[in-house]
Length: 349
Image (cartoon, rainbow, N blue to C red; front, top):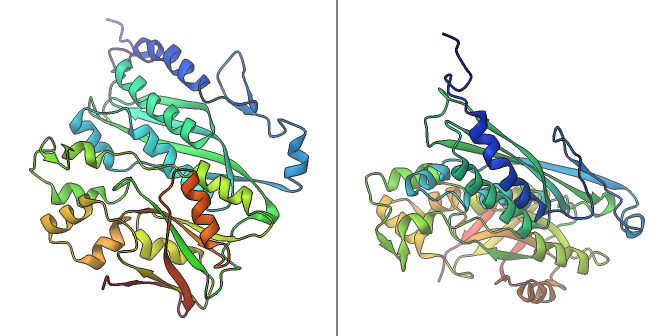
């Protein structure tokens, strides 16, 4: 008897049934740079979309990033909630891209799953397109791979790839950071997409549907990673002449204490004032349940801070004001000082 691809576990028709819906969602993200082709082997994006391009970019440099969502996906799979992890996917790459001073242009996604479920694929794609809308970049294409025998039915993994642009003379490399500069924090929505292996260990055996802070615990854990592209982009545009923004750190795995030193030059340390920002309750809850030492909390989680900007002290107040106008509850949380390249968390008095 002949053996078919479907009998081997790959249902191409099921994948194809989701394609029209995905294409409709993708078009929500398109901008003038997207060049559509009648076939889908690759995506095209034109850098020169207006006469303003030559004025804005004398030496344009492309920026690229890639990342995934990690074991947060296990929470989504347990909760049966799949329409927001795509936002996390976009955020993880786009927020890294912002640290160069770049502007995101387009995004590509890769979905690998055990069995092609059109409803699941569309839910994941919705999250990705929502994230691209928030980031102001085009979803240019992607790949959905059905991999029976590699992933069990109902399980999946996500990877994403962002490409952006930055003027070479405007690249942020941290080299101009000096003692006396101030550190501005942008709040996170919660855990974002890091530390979930520890979260799952702490919550092992607990019901994710139990109430927490007016919601289900699982829903609190799944709050999407915030995307800072529009607010940070506005600040970079407004202060490009003064070059008041000297460095940006995306607070991901390793937390504040490991990510901020990556953008500091030799001879510069940062003192962060604990209590200068609001700590979302989920962090205290995990700290107590898991009896996690405070210094470990700062090395694993973002602790309520999603992004840090190192800025000139003369422009700090104005930058905070601009960020707040963009909807960010920004606040000054620390100062650059002389010393070995490190972050010191000053305990709350």
